[in-house]
Amino acid sequence: MSKNVEKYFKEVLITEEQIQTRISELAERISKDYEGKKLLLLCILKGGVCFLVDLMRALDVPHEIDFLAVSSYGANVRESTGVVKIIKDLDDPIQGKHILIIEDIIDTGFTLSYLMKLLEPRNPASLKICTLLNKQDRRKIDIPVDYIGFDVPDKFVVGYGLDMDELYRELKYVAVMKEGF
Ligand code: IMP
Ligand code: MG
Image 1 (cartoon, helix red, strand yellow):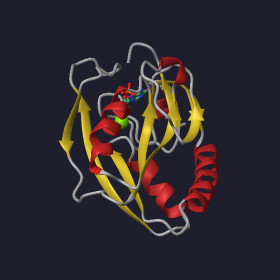
Image 2 (cartoon, protein in one colour):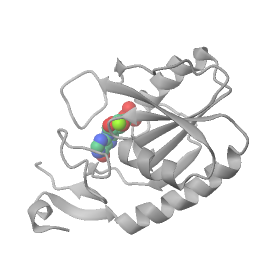
Image 3 (cartoon, helix red, strand yellow):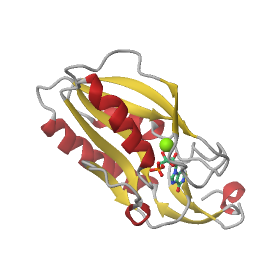
Image 4 (cartoon, protein in one colour):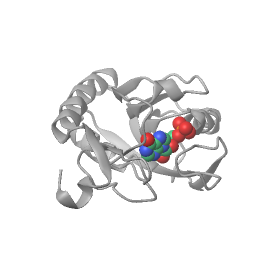
């Protein structure tokens, strides 16, 4: 960890090497599961962007990508409110396509539960979820998650796409924030 950032972080939870190894494993599974299918990776902005880029380059099946930007209403940056606002919708219809949602972290589950309800009526051939991180202990709504990178404890984490007040997304690892930041 560089000196410049280590004063803000308690520990590195997942190293760059662990992330890349896990992405290779997930990509192998996804490539098998979607062989011969019209796959569209649907990245949830902004947090899912690092995961999308590394995952798509590890996949061995042709696929399209698209982006959906959402935000939770409310000022509390550490807690999802459950009310989701669509900031940028998909560019194209998803009817008949196999959709794999690419998300950084599932916490309460409110965001993805909302997105599933939004996307299901658009009649995709299938709709599944792939998340880098999963905070199972914090779940308030049960949602089926098909691919999980890592289960993480109930701690606020940053890096590899995840932010704290829009900062630290660029880190190649996932770190736990110190309390008070
Ligand atoms: P959910 O609706 O509670 O599942 O929240 C999901 C969203 O909350 C994620 O896409 C993140 O943007 C954000 N989030 C939840 N936990 C963390 C965290 O530990 N660090 C950074 N963002 C988080
Ligand atoms: Mg997010």
